[in-house]
Amino acid sequence: MPPGSRTIEEEGVLNEGMKIVKTGRLCEEKLKAWLNSGKYPARNPDQNIADIRAQIAANENGLQELRKMVEGFSIETVEAYMGHVQNNAEEAVRRVIYRLTDGEFTYLFDDGNAIKVKITIDHNNRDVRIDFMGTSSQLSNNFNDPASVCIAAVLYVFRTLVKSDIPLNAGCLRPLEIVIPDGFLLRSPPPAAIVVGNVETAPYIVDALFGALGVLAASQGTMNNFTFGNADFQYYETTCGGVGAGPGFSGTDAIHTHITNSRITDPEVLEARFPVLLEEFSIRQGSGGNGKFRGGNGVIRKFRFLKDMNVAILSSHRKLPPFGLKGGMPGKCGKNMLIRRDCRVIEVEGQAELNLKNGDIFVIETPGGGGYGRHVPHSPAKNKSST
Image 1 (cartoon, one colour):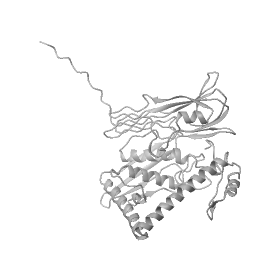
Image 2: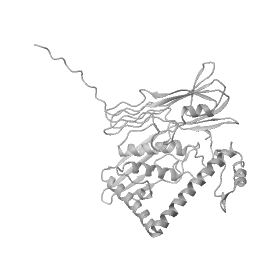
Image 3: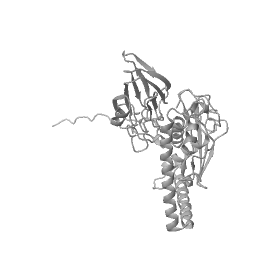
């Protein structure tokens, strides 16, 4: 997760397709050779191979369960029900379209680049055109996306609008025409750097879509990607923040928002496995935007390092805040800080890589969600005079 990558080659080892299991056996030596190849090889190939073994096992388990279904119900029945699931999802999204209206939204990144989206509703045909024309061109930094990430963000948004409990599947996309022009940051071909696209740009896409639809204020809009390591340890986490408010409800505090959904490491596990102390993990009170319905609060997460480490942060909304809607106020920007062991406090940019010494502290304050609706203060009740 390098903050300063400019091409995809700087973001790890690359392969366009390689057989990793042959006749039931893992091609481990071949995998190790690949992980150790290139100008930027993997730091811990054994850990990567353990992850790949787990993924293979999960796929094998899924394959076995699918075979059991086919044996129990027949391939024709299973394929028919796969079609039924997608048809039902399509109809569920088309029902939602009745409640939607046209809208457009422009959402600025901290560096001034923008995602622009225009949503056009066809109530007669019950379908939607989602046009990203006007979005910034492909960038020289690593906030670019392949089109698949943008499509996944659109799929997520329209699935959240469906109230019924349906599985997430491609049927949800059938009523949607998605226009992503070539050469834009949301359709960036190799060798564009893209490591931040999924974790930082995608949350902006989601919030821009909710803003265009007018249904939800912006959430924290970042995964606050934090990595540290040396020759012996490697660690990566994403940090929770505030959820945007909407019509009839306030945002939730201290949660992974939208497609940033992931689990954070328990403090006890973190401290047992890595040379750090988690000195604070608390709700960042007052960071949610005010409004008729308040945005959720972000968090404060403070690490003290017990060994020298290389640290990197990839984060957004450090300069421009998550927006409020319908008169609601924006959430507070996030903040990154380095506190040296001699007590010097250094503010850190949204994307940065640093060398920390034993005793240094790194602090991440995550953004709050935007508020929804104009806040109207209650007038104090007048005392009635007694007779």
